[in-house]
Length: 633
Image 1 (cartoon, rainbow, N blue to C red):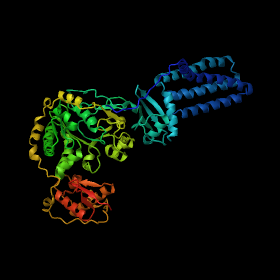
Image 2: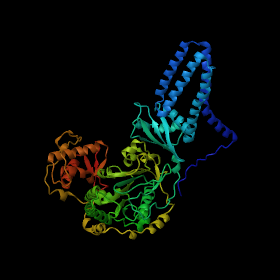
Image 3: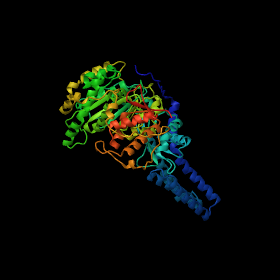
Image 4: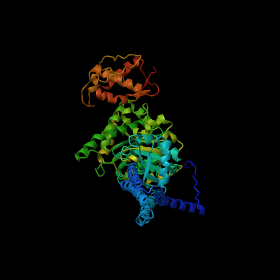
């Protein structure tokens, strides 16, 4: 069953009193210009009776000119036409009062100007008010409410200017006090603005205006729109290319999510029960399997067929066995160079629709268990594949509960787009959100697993103003019958793999000779001689950032080696930096970048690790093979 949500009941007041009150409020908006006209006539008559002299009229004229200039400057936030209209109106009224002071408002030419000219001036303001009411509806009310909330939130004289509205979203610009506030201030104050406006949390999505530093773009939506699970509406572009957007869910403003999945990798993170499997996996893959040029390979060593089994007929491969998973990933690794050579021969830097290659999506469910099963060497090979796979038209989707250092290799985390679902707390959220989303106050910890399917998405092609907008994946029912029926309509056999990739996967068995995670690496590194690393057991000291090794740059296949002493210093500083960040553990694959920079071999790295362990700085994790733990100081 869909999660139970609270209902919001809205009762419309259609009473006659309410109707009259509404119409009266609109008429009162038109009254001020006419009231000012009457006040000008009364003031002129009073001045004429008390000070009919020329010097008094001159004084009123000078005062009017000053007020017109002041009006011009204080109305700088209005458009050019509105600025001229306000200043000219003030000048016209005060000059008429000055003339009436000398000759009396009853003098026929002045009376004519008061009746005809004054009426025209008042009507011009009425016309602007009517157009504004028709265009903005309750925009003036919202703008006034925002102005009050901005003051209460410490945002000074910030104003809201509405640019457009629909039934479910209001788009506008927050005009900030120049030199006092920036868009970052507005983003940080969003919860306080929502409180001042009495909106539900998450109603304001604020982003910088890249053309004006003194403005911020804002979208106002109702987060309650997606509190209720939305049923899967069916595939968006069946039979078309995977280059077209997939539709995995609905944004908070009730628009469909449109996400182009090609030419990048994706991390899907969320706590148990947050919906990353039945919500994100099914909603994304439910679209992918309908595309004519896409193939899906999946690995789940933890839950077997439970999550992805219902999709098996539509998948080109689903591996739940450790050895079979190794062979699959090794085969995909072998296919990368052949695929990039094929694309290069056709002048393509990336996979493109119609290029002749199947776009391959590899879904790694409960990825940390897969990484452990690969062992150090297998994981290292996979990391090499990850870097090159994107341009070859192979996409890896890494699904896991918590992408911290112990679960996700550091080298991989920086190469992945982010899809973050509900998490336990703000610390976990930092591993699932992009830096930009964190800066914009995205808070998936508010959902936890109480609203399964809720998510944020930061990926190529997602509009900037939606990076911080929540969305919700589709609801597929209380069992897997809907997914099984859907997958049966789109069998993998109807989307044959391209010959190049098929041949590489057929040779996967020759590539999958990775060691088990519990193999003893001693025999591998005893063949190379090197001096043991010297490390102070009390603390790891960071070297001078201007030291010689800082300028050394090595390619992974350069064949060059850094000086042994410099390499040891770099190894030492790497451990110190990780320990200083609060990391508790790391795996061999995290040191791939270090090896590439120093040009040293895996046996050399093992020697440094063992030396560090002898000094009491680190220790092997006895429960998880291939992992090292930092010892407490």
